[in-house]
Image (cartoon, rainbow, N blue to C red; front, side):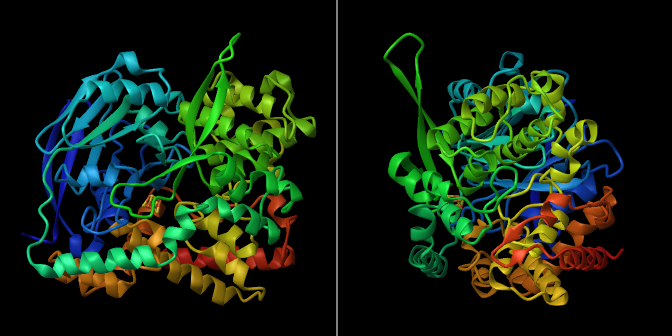
Length: 579
Ligand code: SF4
């Protein structure tokens, strides 16, 4: 086999036709993040609008997908409706394995369908089908209908959008197999703009495993390392919600639109509390023995009856932060109910919660009234948030449609930019300090996972700008390689460069195995070049005042340190992109 080649399906929704093409470059970009940037360079239109029909929507996996544990993520790349620049969103579920079993390294969707459609891709077929009857349905109903309609025999994954994506909300996500998402920066709207309601990946091919003992022995070793590493316990038992109490203890958990960073009410929404009272079961992405997905339940009473409907909702730290502490909601079933509503609408629950928190403070300050928000918004008032979530998720009035473009867009009209908790996009739940605030603001995906800025804050009370920026640049390069593999980042301590090189060699990727550091540096540079070409510049990012008013375990934020970090990290990013 030619190990430098990728197999890519290029599908044009305008014509309803697809073709498999071979693309060279494995040794330079590995797959996943690197491959997505390579494909955007080939098929993307950096100067065109985010919703121009020719803009590609890219899904890419890595060379180890399906062959080793936790190589279970897919990269989705597109021009974001949020900031109109190139971005990536990462998701798991069954998507990566299903794509592997179609025989593809990547799927590139271009064109706009004349009407609502879904795309089905298998190892020997690819076709778009009309589905006007699905348009307007929520994410769960859509999943139900598509599962009934597509009776394939393979390992199937269903990606779909809800009303938020159809309506062009810049914080609409793509749901993957009910419990996972390409959540952030508007992938749902990128799909909706193509009239693409869903993609069914019908993994009906066969995965040939390498012959001989070498692969089998290495697989067993990696599996043992993963299961013995402590990951199983940490991520399986309480999962990421364990962070609520520890971040609250560190005065780093955003409460009520980041007006506070700790509150003793955390005990009502702690990981322990969710595990004891709301957890139904754990679930896992394909190929993952850890199973960090926590599925809880909410109970809904039927009107005028004593009967109840139980709904299953997956929760994690980020969504408990955004729909719990950030809104002052400290009732577990209230958090899960809000989460369920945003899930149904297909809206990123992290961004939605943070945007609603801004609207709540704007209401308290007299900038908004029920004329805009439909119901009066008050921190902690879950009943009002339920109604607001329905209006917001489904874009039922002009105000909520504007809020769906992001809190800063709404603040530009109504005022309140100073307290919009936006760091490139709505903040992740880490008020850990200056390094994280600079890192999310300027990070490639504006994600807490771009770098370990939040953990750097927790370990360093010093204010060494050069050391912090050097850490961010170095850490980003290694994560960029991991997301080109495409590994779950929870496994980053297991998959060292040495172990990844062994895994690559076991599959015959000797060239790539020998050049991991060079390849990581190349991918990091390529991604930034792609982002700059689509309009990004660090100088265009400003950090709202609210972040300068926060106090963490290190004391009040030091404005000079934060500004120096922002300037220096911006310079480092420009240097990476050759600007
Ligand atoms: S640890 Fe969790 S997110 Fe990561 S692959 Fe496993 S189930 Fe998926």
